[in-house]
Length: 132
Image 1 (cartoon, rainbow, N blue to C red):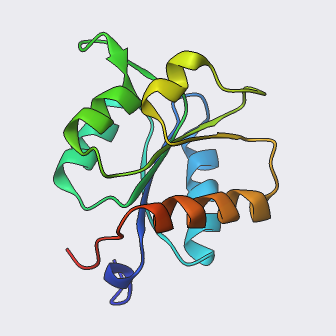
Image 2 (tube, rainbow, N blue to C red):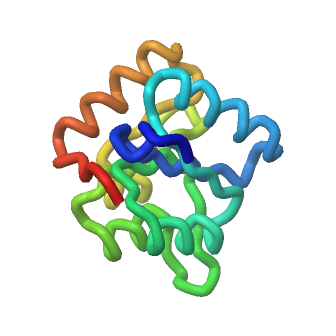
């Protein structure tokens, strides 16, 4: 982590449907746009990172937590209700189940400008914790 990373909002990106290299590339795009990024390629890893780290926003595919019998977004909201969670999915539209525990739905078909705009809106709805 570089010296200025603690001053930037932390985004946790979770996607179990793409290769790690694609997830890393997506994280790099967000980092160049001014965010500090953590990544996870599965629910268990995501929950460990979410519990142990400052996270200001979560971007996640629709993922079920096997042992909990609920979605990842529902589990995260139970743990840290103030942290915005956005479903970032290849689906064209949100499902009612997704939106029960998510603050936004973003299709992966949006432009990077639209994605960054939505991230800004979500971060401004909730206080961004600085430092860790």
